[in-house]
Image (cartoon, rainbow, N blue to C red; front, side, top):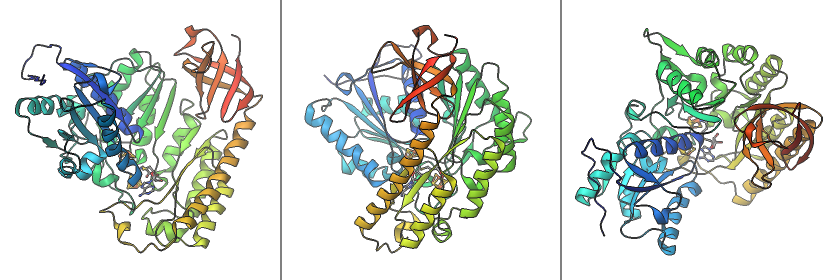
Length: 454
Ligand code: SAH
Ligand code: SF4
Ligand code: F3S
């Protein structure tokens, strides 16, 4: 039977079921959560399998070619297994939504709705329109951020909550598709962000994780029309009663100014884990990437951060094999890695993204050479991370208990300030609480310990 949803009504009725699949970065995870809040408030019921859903929503990532391909492979796989059929309404959104827009309808004819990161709030209308007309609906407009004004309050999310503080990015690093998929950088108003944090705290959240493509350049409006920068926002969020930990992702080294370092020093609630993507260690490559800092500047930043907070754990992102990267350029990256001694970091082989400036550059380094470089880098990063993990043995870590361990229901799973997972035996009544755990052993990068005063 064809599904028809009439959304032009003020009466909340059971409209149907939806399933959301999310790929990509934390900003997509945030959007996926908000889509659930929105559709639930509009009268839909969330289900946990595409098979049970009238509407299947995909929140996608376009950062590398592989991420993009995965989306279309997944739809084909679901069709093959019968998890979706011709009655399922398929709504494809996220960064592939904006990147390919109308083209998606040609690439996969089963897609009915295309939305973007900035149009999630219009999903109920888009679903209603498709149901009424059976004509595909494409709405990926990305000129302003209005979505936050149209999303309902979030319900309980557990002890840690993502809060997006800005959308888009205007940096235009030459390899990166994000500025084209999420639009120009725009900051949310301070009060909106604080209200969202307060709502989360009232729902039991202890940790606020602030999100943006470059949080360090946050410049939102205060109530009086003045501009609030990122360090001031950190003080404001830290001042909310009940906020016990603040994380933020992602920091561009270029905008990591002294006032933000000072905030890291002054605010104990800021976590020890600071993620600052460097991408490459060669100044020549950094310039070609349009990153606007040098390796020396980056190293100085890490020194300042460590002086401000000796317990800080600096993690990073790396791109290996950017067009024109020579063996010497790569050695520069290894040199910086050995000097900074990064903790748990991410590294990727460069992926050509259509429409970005780097896609036009000659790229004659063979794939095998790039893979060898990646392998060397990842081995060294892993070695460093292991040293940090081992060094936790014997220390006491303040941890936020997230739930029970998947492997052993008598064990609780928590997270230390450094981002490490810490498991220990304890009562489930501690879920959602901050506790002290003495670390006794490690398994891979997971820390095992005992509750202090438990
Ligand atoms: N805004 C963040 C990064 C967001 S994208 C920042 O500026 O640091 C997350 C990571 O994906 C980047 O840090 C980069 O390492 C990687 N990435 C982005 N574009 C890529 C590409 N074309 N190929 C390979 N990796 C890429
Ligand atoms: Fe992409 Fe650069 Fe913006 Fe990060 S800062 S999202 S890497 S363009
Ligand atoms: Fe991917 Fe878009 Fe995030 S491209 S990394 S989901 S901003």
